[in-house]
Amino acid sequence: MQSVSILIVEDEAILSMDLTFRLEQMGYNVINVVDNGPAALQICEQKSVDLVLMDIHIRGEWDGVETARRIRQISRMPLIFLTAMTDGPTIDRARLVGPSAYITKPFNDLNLRIAIDLAIHNVMQSTPATAPVDSAAEGGDEPSRGEIIMLAKDHIFVKQNYRFVKFPITDIRYLQSEGNYTDIVTENHKYTLRLVLNRVIEKLHTNETARAIIVRIHRSYAVNLRQINTFTEQEVQIGGQVIPVGRSYRIEFMKGVLAQ
Image (cartoon, rainbow, N blue to C red; front, side, top):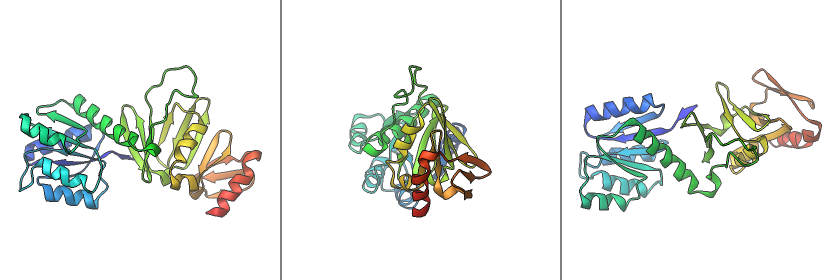
């Protein structure tokens, strides 16, 4: 499991340390902290960054707005300005690079967390293949609790307990359904969604990698073919878990195994 990876661009050491601590307490992963534009751009080019928190007044020739403009040339990752600068010209310049939010210092943890989650959510929605599934659809009349499943490249984002967690699609071991709920099971974690199994599979299959490895083998189970340890026509074993193979799913299951 990975939390959302955040790059902090801030030139005041005390503030960057405080922000790092607060973000990690909220469950996010601070991938790096830099104090200038070129270093921020290099991190975005070389590492998997999900979101940038950017001060506008930073070291070097590029301020935060210019740095954001250059990052925008290589990626559409969400970017949030955290700054004490509130003058009109600065805000007008910042608006041109399309930030997800503009938060003035000082700020509180709740507003920051909301801004981050909305930024991640909105950037996923901007691509049809990553639009969130309506967790109330096909799930009865009980109101949705807000769980969301989204895909980005070869990672899956699942919202649990009011924050996103991220992990590679290939980490999925199997999916298990019970009524209107589906568990996504990895080696060390289980994520429960208020979605029927068919909807979860449908969502995963919008991703090419998932489509190749996630196959339904029972009315209550789907498995990652690459995680199977042993199998027969009646059952598969994944990490000590024995999962039945339904008769009506055997042909598709065997086709999937042979395709690996």
